[in-house]
Length: 176
Image 1 (tube, rainbow, N blue to C red):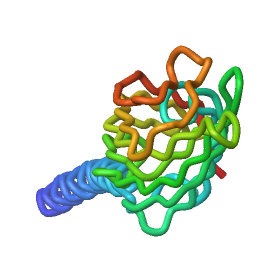
Image 2: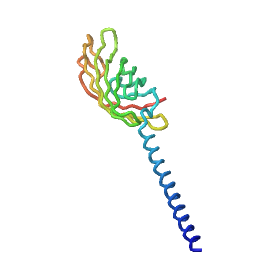
Image 3: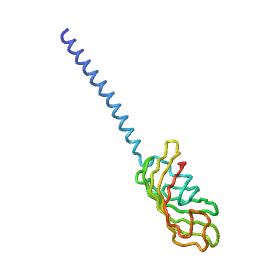
Image 4: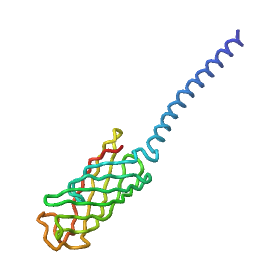
């Protein structure tokens, strides 16, 4: 009997150790898998269409294509009261997940007529967040500087023949 009690006690201890070990192992595995999922290289899809309010487009649509997890190439068209704006963009995302600070820049053309147009360059620094649904938001500060002047003055108060100013930039993204 004594031997049977010892075997039962050893079996019970072994059962408890294996049971506790497997439960804690499952918890650790779940935590590790969640950490891996959180840091996947590209959790956003590689195409982004977004409504941009603020410079450089003033009010327009920007189409972006992810070249890598960090580098995004884009083009946009926008409008102001008496004309339109076109831009090209290169954006660098510092992080490759859903949330990332970024810098962007490129050329921009403001056109209001044959003698009322400005070619300039812009730079943006901001933050971007893409939700699991593919919708997203961005906020940035953009500075636009004219390279060429306009022969005729623009009638829009924020675009003039000596463009050299900053503005807030808001974005509403659809990442697909």
